[in-house]
Length: 84
Image: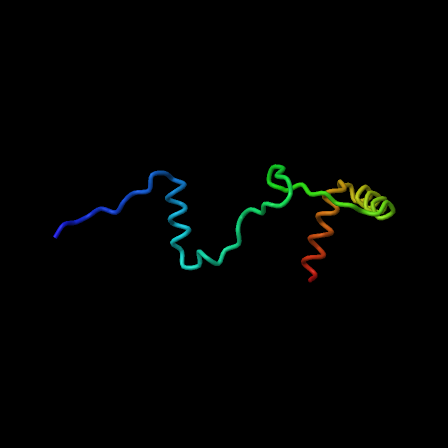
């Protein structure tokens, strides 16, 4: 009877992939990336059409909070999704 060694992964990435895909719940995870929008660092850029009066109110509230428009909109969306 011959003793055979297990094949070693060729790189650290393939070893990590083999480890993750071998987990019992491997098929149940959500994908780490989302392909819609343009990639901008760790975020995605989207286009949004908004009524001028609503945009003015967003800008006023963001300025009062000392944050930017995008951060304010992101926080508002996050809060709305958490309340659901």
